[in-house]
Image 1 (cartoon, rainbow, N blue to C red):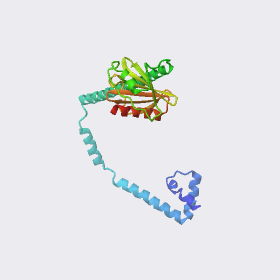
Image 2 (cartoon, one colour):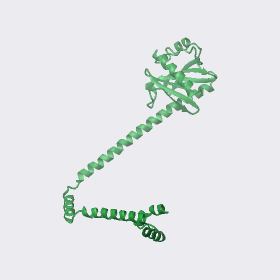
Image 3 (tube, rainbow, N blue to C red):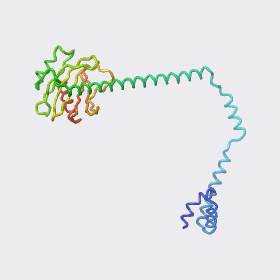
Image 4 (cartoon, helix red, strand yellow):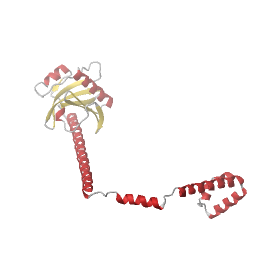
Length: 251
């Protein structure tokens, strides 16, 4: 019971209890030596704090001296205010340009991924998706010579579940590129290779795999070429084929 009153003593001293509670605590303090001592201690602490506050309150002379110093401080000139305003406007303009550039880059990246997805979907719907049909990389790669302004290497797939179906020339906007088709467990994967300079929007140079529509898409830049690997296979399969392509180009 005493603990209940002890918890209320601070509130009691601040006068924040209801009238009935104030009366009850007051009656208890009068009959409880422990609570009475606690109340006395808290009252003495409050008085000490108040006394300290009054002791260190500034004198009228000090207040007047501070006020004079404030009045003597030079006021900001109109020129300085104008420069400050101009600086703020300039910063806002720079921030606007940066946001606009970033938004444009993001839009161009999204457009590039969307166009690649469209190319893959068109391939799935085509009765003749490739121009050269062969599972032999030594047959498919030479076919592109003279048809593209760049060359590339194809990976060795022996011991893997991937099968090369064939390839053909495709276009991303006006940029020509190579389109290769691989198959794994009945899933068709498209590999698109373009010159990196022809791709609008700043894309990551390192290999990254992300979801686009219902497809997994991996992309990276290597030796001035931009690779896209896209299909409805798992992200692990997309990454596996991408790693093989990267290794073939490095070798």
